[in-house]
Image (cartoon, rainbow, N blue to C red; front, side, top):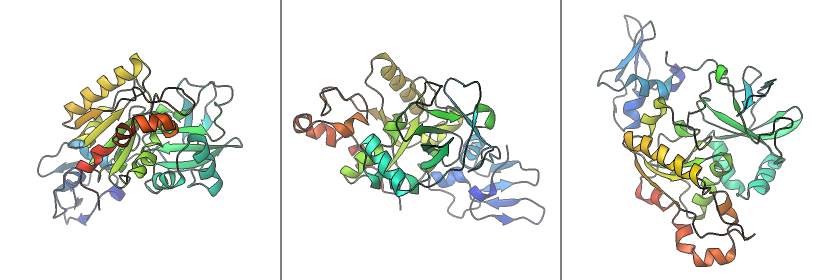
Length: 316
């Protein structure tokens, strides 16, 4: 498991071979100000001189040659594998039309989507002539693709497609976690629509610069062990779907894992909130369509959904 030199800072070659660099795990904790705690030997092995866990270092700066940023080398599949996987096309930042369609599809504002794009969390692509939006982790360990039309993938009866496990992608890798390193506050959500809703709500209360959206692809998916150290010391609010047992199960599962990683964790309840259609609010994306009467009655609760970020330091 070698390190990707492009993800390391302050590389300095050593006369006997190999190099020193800033330890990414130390840097995540605000340490290694001299930027030279990491030792990397010519054979690719490495260690932090103050004893940081090598799995954490790899999670932050590991080499993933099998996950390209674009091109046909990555195949993707739905959660239930199709008989014929389709190719992963070139990922694009998106056109004005792409952002407009996604804004209308999910009732989120364009500025929040553009911020997600600037953080490397949102891209667009064309699959067999159909335009899609793609949420991804900047490490390319995990991603999800959905059609901009709002339709399910034709012939597959699924809304989201994700990278094939044999491509090197990790289904349990939290999407967005590698972009959260400089943020003290994380909103952990379930599913793609809620993921693109976080910064929409954060922007309504001026918290968008303080909070990082992070997504799990499904309620039953465990956070992989290699990602857990990236939550250490973070203030995390968990938003699960108000759909009975599955949401409650996800909350218990992820909270248990996050607490074991020394994160500070709580949750948010959608109880009593109604959409403008009269349907109950069951998730963070539904909250984008909250009705006027519900807003008046529950204004303080709605405004407080991301107020935990105020407790954290705003990244520079």
